[in-house]
Image (cartoon, rainbow, N blue to C red):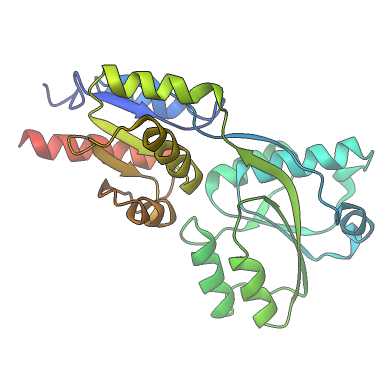
Amino acid sequence: MTSDQPLLGKHVLVTRPRGQADSFIDKIKAAGGIVHFVPLIAFRSFLDKREKERLQQLSTYDWIILTSKNGVDFFFQRLEEKGIEWKSLQARFAAIGTKTAAVLKSYGFQAEYIPEKFSADQFAEEINSDRFEANKVLIPKGTLARTTIADALREKGAAADEWVVYETYFPEEEKQHLIDLLKTEKTDVLTFTSPSAIRHFMESIQEAGIHELKQSVIACIGPVTKKEADRFGLHTMVCPDTYTSESLAEEIIRYFRKEED
């Protein structure tokens, strides 16, 4: 192992969705890691029964809060499918995280507010401390997203409408791929970037009767994912302060660099 390749020979499981893992994989490989890519979550459009109402009120919102890159893409996809000229939207935009803000910018909109830490809990704290104020807010989200931000806004007297625009699901075809990998390869690092990825992982290994994970380093992108790992009895060794895949890769590299020392 060399200092510039602290992951040399380390087998790293990457569970991010297809189309969202490339930069993470590149960082792991650049550090010498051997990547096993098994996407444990996928996304598809979702038809919310409240969609018609949300679309009718679109011009009445002073803020639209987007909590993920998927939320951005599926929000604008739904507008396009309904023939709505979204470039004329007058609402201001808030985004959780610089990655979400970057995707928003690709649609021609600037995120005017980004919480200090890239999480719904942090956003709720900033709402509670009056750092973010709004009258009527739309929150496009996924089926598994919590109501943390909407609850905080309502407690402050704002109207907060949630609109489910996509759903998260387990791509079943990946289950056997995961089981075969865990039975034949020693995985030095298991990486998770969402609670649902952990649930799908645990569901798969429990069905297969796999119980021995003690030799693997568990790496989680942030506290919400770590909490889900804790719930299943997984001890997280790596969890970055900034909740991005790049920071997760850097923290994994830092962890093994310390192991070298």
